[in-house]
View 1 (cartoon, rainbow, N blue to C red):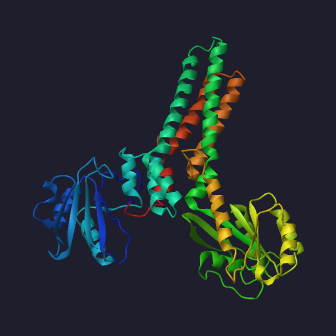
View 2: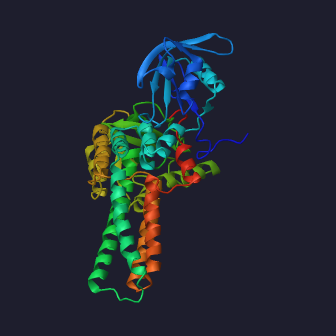
View 3: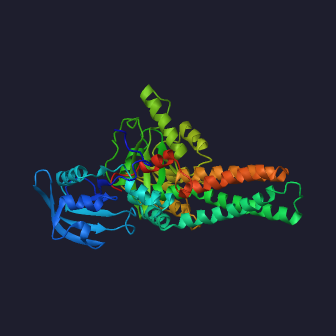
Length: 464
């Protein structure tokens, strides 16, 4: 039997557990498709058959295995008739007791009665294919489930409400108007274009390119809002990087010893500072490495620095500034970093003042990881960087697929503008404008392939 794919077997009735497995008070098994009510009739026993009740009603009864006639659980069964359901199909949700064994048993009976196990994200896929939501809204469902911060949650909700979709639809309308303007002239190739008509087309192209650029420009900050601020802790060995990580996380995440080079790999964890999601990354200390493992650790540290949104350059206040630290600061000169003077409790005022004078052009924080001094100010700096990341635009993209589609659209439009400026045939110009339209349409699913659907929905949890 051939494995189902996202665009095949759409007539199947599907079933899955829609709540996390594990001990809980309640759990839900969801069934969706043309045979949902018939399957419910076979396994549910209450006062009335599910197929005979009104839509959007809840009923008490028991789940019984048709093979053994044994009762599996006492449940509440919710009946929802198409199209006013999540999938826009007939849907049944069985609320059971939350034990993993009970849920698995109910699901197994549903499959025996004719349902197929749902693929990851297949319920949301059907909502898309049945026209209840578009592809960008479908992706917002996954973002909503995985949101780890207030900003990420708000972004996902706005996208689910259709704000991005509305902006994309408006952009598509502009491109369609441009395409219609060009195609109307293809039938009259011998007629010269009037200057005012040429200006109109140029203006349309310029406006669309500007709109594409504005959306693309929101990606980096949108990604920060969605995934959190990437804060990378760097410095020489034994300056207190791991101690700083533990202090900011308020837990012992990294091993701390007096031995230089204890941290040889990247260690990361998430923290929430005043509603701001932060990924804190502890890296191997920079120095002339003594062995292969340490060299690899330093390479990984350099890779994290390239991905970082904010770097914390940790320096041991009780030691002299080394050549490695001067070199490190030069490497960071074009990046967003602050200087953190650790072990400030071990130095006097004169030494602290001299160190401050070395970094007058940088934000500097004097801290002690052992005494926990200076940390609130450092946290406030991290939060302020996140506030700076909040774009003024109401519509923000945070999905790499959307960014790449917009970049392809912009590139195609730029080719079209060049062809138009060089007085090439309208057919050539229209061809690239059509590519621009198709690329923008991919974002909301006007155009899609099995590969795109697999890329999106395979990352969903089963049952959603």
